[in-house]
Image (spheres, helix red, strand yellow):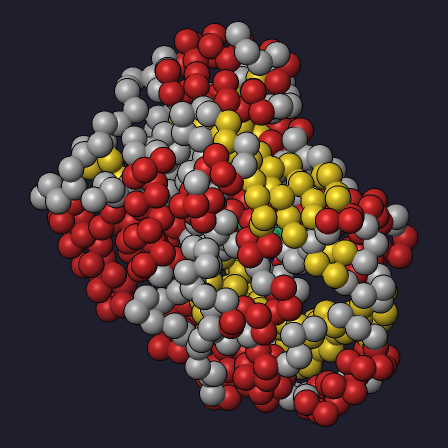
Length: 535
Ligand code: FDA
């Protein structure tokens, strides 16, 4: 493990040296130092004061914490708070924030659902770093469904749960492929791709974006893709949030769903053959019918198979019994329900039986859970049974860890890697998300997670290589953070993480687009796409 880390450190040192040697011709950066009071005064000329909260307001901290899902990210966020949080109620407010920010050298971070795994939508990892404001889009969450077109416009402050609810109630028979968890924001998830249980049939959320409106780095409103141009419209559909502008709304292609879908769940312990079942699942799940998605959550040496079938129980039981007899599926393992009920059931479980489906329109101030650290991988060649046995028995210590395996294949394998910035397509069997959870009371809660780091190192030979792929929506700052040299983010440093999220060609294209639309990097964070000069 140590030698892997030293090689990584050496390569980071090399690219840093490359940057400092002046490889990059610096673009002019945003002027400094910032004048925070002038910025706030500027906001007050265009935005009602009740929409701008500064740390002196009693509502500031509750609002800041309101959509944070990860206790690990709370303390640092409150220790170094943003200059203010603005909750715009229309596009002109967003434009005003960007214009005032540019004028007075205050950058912005934009937040939709607040689920960023490293909290980049509301916190900066640099203590006492440059001033920044948070644009919290929670008040912009309208969903306008156009049933006869099978499309919808959704504002980016909406969660996927709100989207599902509004679509299914306005247009029964239609749905949208996005996250399993309904609290995720459509601003972030669609910006980074959007994987879920309908992606094998219909692709990523980003594959189903027909149009969008956004505010660019100059504070201009670009009302549709024509105003953006092909490159920018390509970049915002999977190139990662917080890079190219603030998306205000997406126009989505809605997809057909049958009146009844099936939820199927089977758990297997190691004694019941979990290792054999997961070993087989790796090559089976990506070639099952596109209507059937079977994912696996591995926790405490147990494999939980959860699936969505766009059809009825008897058909899926027959399919599973013939293709995956090892699971021993019976009709007792499945439940038929509407697609909307499914989106609630997979999140709330049986508790949804006592709640109305309006629970999907969640109040986003959910209880803060444990400390969490995530990483991700892509698998292109199945792991052996012996390797899985070691993974199932990986020591947890006092912490708990989860592996979530999401099958690819289906239409995902038929979409070109250049269609949008998300590159993990034809050769991928499945995605792994590693999740480490702990209570954080130990050592102030900020210690380096151990389960996840050691398992991730162990997995190196078994997962995708050159580069080792990762999903941008499972953001991981351990993969590298940007280095700003002479006022500009160094492309060579950023490549270390960027090519892993997007592949070399897509990352280069993203950087060129950044060079075209935001050359001075008004939108900049620890893992923002750096600008490359156009030629
Ligand atoms: P957040 O508001 O934190 O934004 C994330 C990033 O996007 C930030 O960089 C932010 O600045 C930027 N951004 C937000 N709104 C923007 C806008 N309007 N314009 C431009 N940039 C914007 N993923 C997945 O694909 N499938 C899944 O099933 C799940 N499930 C899941 C469950 C849980 C509990 C978590 C914590 C995360 C997931 N994810 C996921 C990952 C999720 O897709 C990822 O964290 C998204 O970036 C979250 O989007 P939010 O808008 O919620 O986050």
